[in-house]
View (cartoon, rainbow, N blue to C red):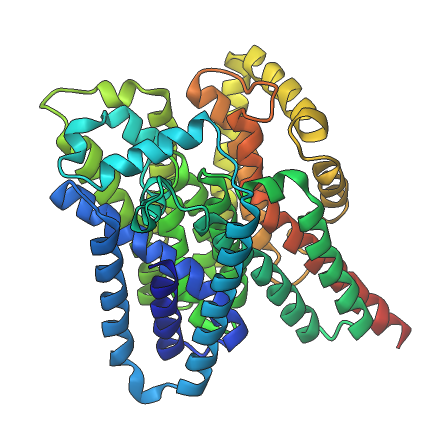
Length: 467
């Protein structure tokens, strides 16, 4: 069912975009998983059950039906090649994972698996509390219901497939942009090779590729949103996977709307028409309305505000506010005079500063735990040490053309990371399993690709100067 859903998404992108086959594969995988989760969430809210076979069938048939609308302008050889590559890649990962059994499970993993088991049966909302639903959301429980189709409690394949798509996407985005900038071929090979090797050598990133949790999905979907915003100027076809990946992030975690909004805000500024901007944000907004509105708040008894007292709801409310800003921003036209993305990041910084003044001990404890986890106990090895040192020297809005598309999500996520302890009412803790350590993965691929682009631009400037 995973291969069928991703293949249908590849056909959809092939008929409605001009993306080349190498991009159709990773973006088709992320799009397919996003549509599967979206359909499953709607079924869950409407029918209180989302069995994987029904969810997958509706997702596949829906995408194929939409794909047929655009068949008259499609290059079917390109689509067939993309589908063949997608099926081949997924099959390879399934065989390798099945042979090596590298899956990693923690107590959190078991909670996601248990939620997925409830989702696949009738009366899901009566069997699980709304507070648990708020924390676990729908992305991870729903995708792991796919394991039920072959008698498993979870799917050991779906996270490696998605993270593998993220690795391929990293390579393609870097290679194509560096070639467009006329970086010397040797420089392109070195930078792309180093980026991929760096990701594979990162202990925690590799761990998250086989970890039953939400982090691998958010890490790759966030890269799709940011990289797509950067590429949409010359390839409008990125808009479909960007919009759907944002909805996947929204449905992945309580603070998912905030992460999605940080990627969408600069993406909106790239598009020239109000219609295109609205369509870009619409899936994420609908995901919020369906899940947080109809699914959680809509099922509360009159006057029951217990869900809002849950610490996780504060992160969700901040995210909904940021997404509301993104939605309102779609109607604005004069971007140079009103830099909404930058102002939004500045607003988050002000909120963080006020919170730190009111509760300095939380910031101090969170900083201590973060430093120990990033550079020691968190399984990251030297990954974040290298990234932080390089970001200090390269992170600026003018590092290369349209660098603000990367600058806003990276800086915004950094501020959000430090704000989350205040929202949840307690500092991060030392240890590989603490959420503060795990959510560092969400921005990992975005940082790696940004650094590759920044250094590639430096090589371009150097070669032009010598010429």
